[in-house]
Amino acid sequence: MDFSGIHNYYEHLVTDYIHTSVIPNMPDKPADFFLDVACYALSRLPSRYMRHEIDMVFYLEESVRADMVEDAHKAVDIAVEYIKVNFNKNERYE
Picture 1 (tube, rainbow, N blue to C red):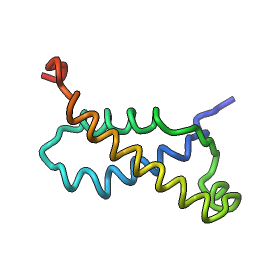
Picture 2 (picture 1 turned 30 degrees about the horizontal axis):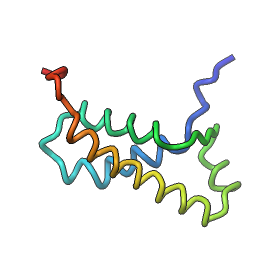
Picture 3 (picture 1 turned 30 degrees about the vertical axis):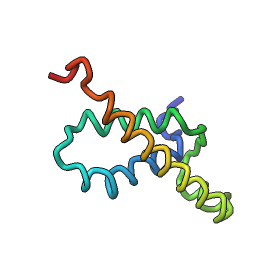
C-alpha cells in the first residue's frame, strides 16, 4: 500500500509563505537556512493531514482556514528569528 499521498496541510502553508514572503526578503541566505526555518515552524504547528487539498478546502470553514494560515505565518516568523540566531552557530554548513 502506498501512503505517499498523505500530507500535512501545514507543510503547504509554511512552504508557500517561505517562498512568497521570506526568501524574497532574505536573498543572501542559503537553502539550508530556509529548510531549517520550515522544519522549526512545522514542529511548532499541529498536524493536519489530508490526501487531497480539495478535501481541506471543502471541509474547512473559511474562518478555520484563515486561522491556520495566520498560525503558519506566525510560526514561520518565529522560526526565522530563531534560526537567524542559531543558524550555523557551530559552522555545521561550512
